[in-house]
Length: 171
Image (cartoon, rainbow, N blue to C red):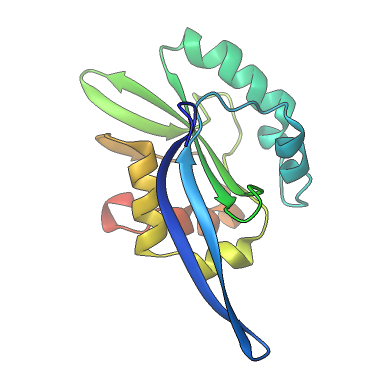
């Protein structure tokens, strides 16, 4: 892992294809120098469920202009297929301290109509979701006191719930 990509965990998905079993590995990491204008993110954004608030233009402007102005820091959690480094998911988050409390939030700051994870294949996320995925994401996020994911549309609630499983992460 490079200094720009903190590897927090690995997830294994055991599956059966005809009579052969195979294993897919997903690397979960914090990539806080992440470039939303990159070709690889633009490819992930082509997902038909992606929204305007997940667009490369919106997130680039949000993180470059609004986040520093509001005293927050960029916190991007990624899941990549280890076999080829392709994105499986991106969680656009921020971290800020308010009255001594470390707050991790979705990329909102009161200017988005809704927030959602950007996911290439939610069936894969469904298959690996659970304590292991949640722990890997928590490890990538690091220390925090409160997680706040808002605003969430009903169709995105299920996806966010796949990434944060523990009772303290109620959505």
